[in-house]
Image (cartoon, rainbow, N blue to C red; front, side, top):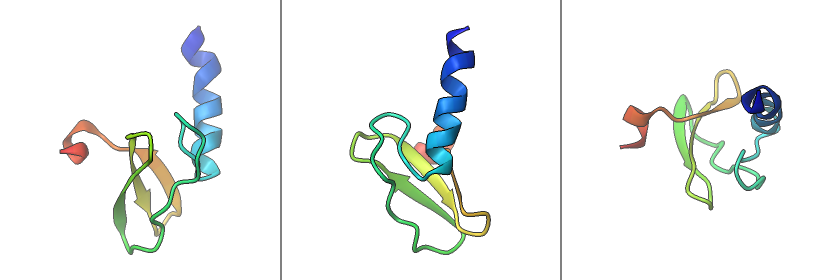
Length: 63
């Protein structure tokens, strides 16, 4: 039940280009293709410049 409440909020934050943990704006949108972006709080995201969307990085992308 808790996940049903949090998931839409996290999706909205990512659509706005903000971190789901601390709410800061994610930077690093200048690269072409798929770029790795690390927030100040330590969360890792992937930015797809073609689709212009952020997503949380998978475990194999973090290493």
